Figure (cartoon, rainbow over the protein chains, first blue to last red):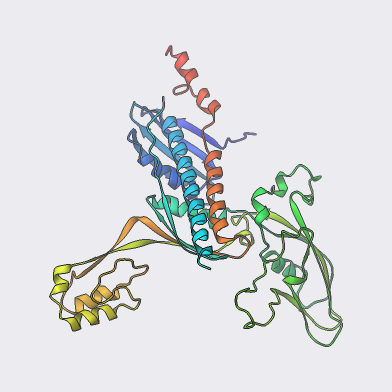
Amino acid sequence: MQITKRVSYERDTKIINAASFTIEREDHTIGNIVRMQLHRDENVLFAGYKLPHPLKYKIIIRIHTTSQSSPMQAYNQAINDLDKELDHLKNAFEAELARHSGSQSRQY
Amino acid sequence: MEGVSYQRFPKIKIREVRDDFMKFELRETDSSIANALRRVMIAEVPTIAIDLVEIEVNSSVLNDEFIAHRLGLIPLTSERAMGMRFSRDCDACDGDGQCEYCSVEFHLRAKCINDQTLDVTSKDLYSSDHTVVPVDFSDSSSGFDNSENKGIIIVKLRRGQELILRAIARKGIGKDHAKWSPAATVTFMYEPDIYINEELMESLTPDEKREFVESSPTPVFKFDENTNQAYTYDEEVIKKAESMGKPGLVEIRAKEDCFIFTVESTGAIKASQLVLNAIDVLKQKLDAVRLSADTVEADEQFGELGAHMRGG
């Protein structure tokens, strides 16, 4: 019996610096944001994701990079950047919430 | 080798905050982030809801599973939910998922003794944990206007009918069953950019200008001033401009990186807390899909082990 890992990948045999990442138990929520973040990377030539079948709960992300980088590096870099962006978003939100409730209470 | 960071720096501005409602602007980020936040708020922020019902006596007109279904849909205050464990992951209980760390117990006893119909409501549910109780919908600010809030009606009993049950509430996410979704509605829209052609505007008579301002169902413009702080807009203004023989007077475009979110919560979690929890859940999901070091090492071509093998 095979235990499938959460994230696995296969390099493309015909194209150098290309790989397909298979992520189990994820959907458009993660697929779209990782794909959009990969588009911002200059070393990424191609980035796309798909759900092979709507009833099967997994996604495949395909990445081609230049020789300056590798698909794994681009993938990890994208996830790290997204993590930092969400951290920034959380801090901005908490600061704005504190500022907003602070100014509200001063009105009374 | 560290790459350059391609991070974005989103900005937030809050327009309105209430306990169960929130409206805010999100700027300088991509629509995929906005959509991911929306999806996570609806489907993956955990809450607590009744999941297992043991009925001892039920002589009401509704059958057992009907009442159990209704009990599941009652929103419970779920501040504890983020820190709680899922029942299936809990190792403290013997596997039946009913220990104090992963579940909350409720019980309900109702019997109708007089001729008047007895309403069994969510207020009759007694919790073992005072932080997890059915949400109280009475508006504290409305004063004497509304009659006493009775809670959500579960079933109505006639004389002689009785209902005794014990219920276990567990943590879950909206993806599993909609009873665990903390969001009533979450929507976002793009902020509109409204361009008014000044030259064409000059060529209108004052009467025509007034007509133009009034033609928009929601007040977007003020006479003699052009304000661009519109929240909503409609095509009426454009149609009016065309009908007056001056197409191109107003151009309305959507700004691609500014989103106006409207979040309404069911009361299980506060609306502002819902957004914070959604960001945390999204971060957890991203952490879970990182490439682990051994997956990369084991790869023949790209991993460092592979590089060694090739003599790199």
